[in-house]
Amino acid sequence: MADVLPIALPVPPDVGEGFDALEALQNLPLVMFVADSSGDISFGNVAAERVFLSCRGGLKVFGLSGVFGDV
Image 1 (cartoon, rainbow, N blue to C red):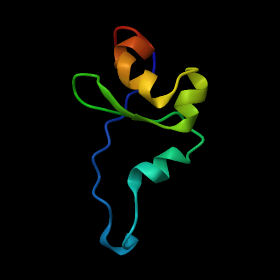
Image 2 (cartoon, rainbow, N blue to C red):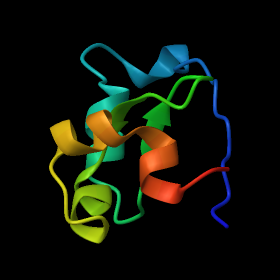
Image 3 (cartoon, helix red, strand yellow):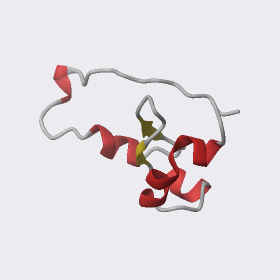
Image 4 (tube, rainbow, N blue to C red):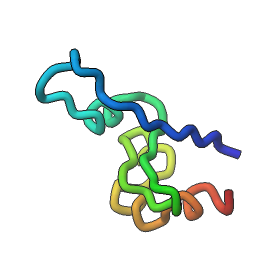
C-alpha cells in the first residue's frame, strides 16, 4: 500500500517572489500527487506520469482510487 503524507505547509517568506511550489514538485524524481480529501487528483508530477504511464489529465480522471485501488 502506498504511503499518503498530507502536506500543508506555507511557503516561507524568505523564498522570494516568483516561487512556484507546483513547479518545484514537478522537478522531483519522486512520484508526487496533490489530491483533495475526496481523492481527486489536481496535480501529478512527471515522475507520476512515467510510473503510471499516464498524462497529467489521465491522472486527474482516475483519481487516487483509480491509481492505487481502494485505500
